[in-house]
Image (cartoon, rainbow, N blue to C red; front, side, top):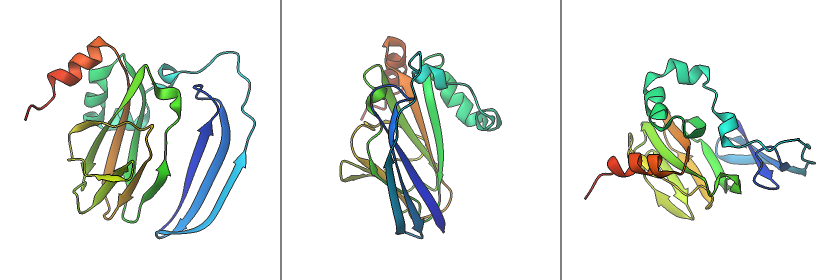
Length: 177
């Protein structure tokens, strides 16, 4: 399997302040080439925020289960990422831009063949084995990476506005041990 991993770094909390780009080309699990470059962020008259990135896509419309989960948090939803990770898939350790905090938090839900033997989400150097179908609060501002040992793994990342309503949704649906 061949793939390219691309990472953008931002200069501030604006989603449009990209100041560096890095890429790693992989063949299988081996990095074959690496590139990075500084770039000059564009100048905009207004800052773009999470709520500027919540227009539903075709994937949202075609997969009712995703829409059902996302809609629970509407209108307090920001960007939503759906990632398919197949065998040998790897996201190198990175931190997401600091523009997500403090008014937003992120939730992770994995599904498909996401079992401990198939999928590892590393968070600050420690393995995390999320159970499929459950939502997890994950601090994506810490170092994190993903490794896949099987095909058909999916990760849904929700960016949600932090407020009383969304906090109540989370607490109401928390499993007590």
